[in-house]
Amino acid sequence: MTIAGVDSAIVLVLGIAMGFGALLGFWLGRSRKNPVSKAIPQVYIQGLNYLLSERQDQAVEIFLDALRQHPESVGILLALGRQFRRRGELERALRVHQYLLEQPALTLELRRSVLFEIARDYLKAGILDRAESILKELLDSQPDHAEGLVTLAELYELGSEWASSIEIRKRLLQAGLPQQQEVIALLYGELAEESLLKGDHDQARRYLQAARRESPENPRVLIIAGRLAFMGEDWQKALKYWEKLLDHAADSAILLVLEPFLQALQHLGDRQHQDYLQRLQACCHSPLAIKRLAEALQIVEGQQAAVRFLREILIRTPNLRVFQLLLSMDAQAPEVELMEKMALAVRHWQIEPELFHCHVCGYQSTQYYWRCPSCRQWGTFSGGEKP
Image (cartoon, helix red, strand yellow):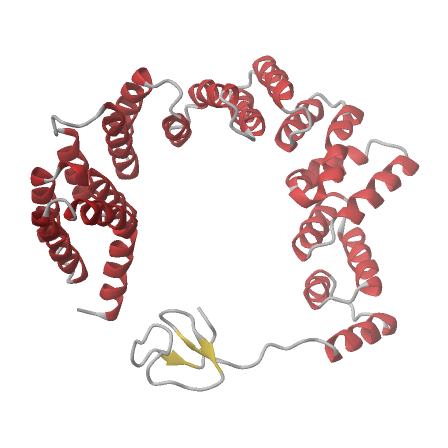
């Protein structure tokens, strides 16, 4: 078996170790009263050995057979099924969970746990209708099952069923789960976007009103509201919404509306235009934001506006990425002051050391290894660029 295979098997074993440990404690407690029970863990040790040998089907048979003899071991089978699902072995996960569901002695609480795991198996497999019906069955018997509600909401979102997800998320909000209002506002944003695509602006506005009731300053709500105003050529109103995004610059949401923002500025007086532009430039300080704003300025106001913006940034804070962007936009040689600033920046630039790297796991080192110290694979080192 390969080293990677051993590591994968160990992860699977560790995943069920907690359930096995609790069960082992239960057996050891019983063994003081009944010496026969001391032999029970041997069955599970055999199953763990099969897992380590990557003989999963035989391991499943061992564990299922142990369940027939010892119903108290349901927990370890649940853990085993979860680990199979995490590894993408969905047939094995379903087989374990379905077998558990068929046990006549299963308590109501355990039955609900097993139903939930089966629903997640089907969800992972992309069989959404089956997962939905099982989750609904679970929630019919336990309406406040938080994990079931969260999973059902995620299922609806996978299928772009935004209205259904909103209904479930409102139940989660009533149950006290945090951050649901922000999510609900985003879901209303999805519905508003769909309405805009259909040309139904009135319906889009109704969805935005519902979103504002949940989260008035949600960035997506502000973006769509501004777009509606922009399409109606109400420039001041559009900017009123979008300028609020400048107060949430860390979200980077303003980068989504740079072009229409600049286009709306064209309809303002010079002083207003300059004030807005300065605020916009002040919140675009990351390399990505600078690049996006420069490109938008080039499209809306012309090349000279973009070049002027980049030069002002470089004079204040020399940056090689921004300098490269400037050179790509302006064929003229940079002035002496700018070149001096960039020379100083290059002199203090922290250059990454030249390293060998493993093309399997990405491990880096100044020393060449025939066998990678990290993933222990042979012949995987090279001195080219890291993938």
